[in-house]
Length: 139
Image (tube, rainbow, N blue to C red; front, side, top):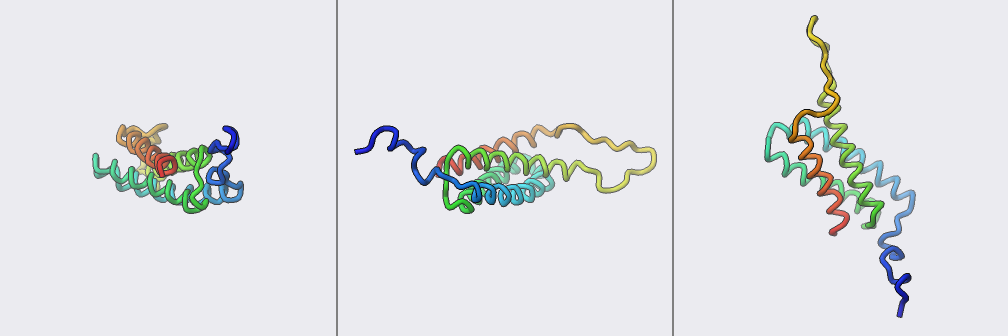
């Protein structure tokens, strides 16, 4: 018999993530999500509605990588890690696409929008973050 406090899931070793493995998972997931966000925003936006499937796969892959790096640990810390790195990767992908790589012709001003203007970008980012968090939560 266990008391209610001892049998709660927060004491389970499944939810106890060390700081070292959490930091390693953050670095790995951030690297993967920046690469994936760059590919998804650079190539995926051209596919329209089908880009949402790419966002779903991208978010699930980031969540799975976070699980594998930490030894299948779960919990609120892991969900935040997966969601935050996925959102950061999407934002980095937009920044890489929006930055002008070439000098514009003389007389043409360089316009850098403050926020992404495509509503599809926001929808893709939401789907990707949802998929990453869901991969951790609903293993």
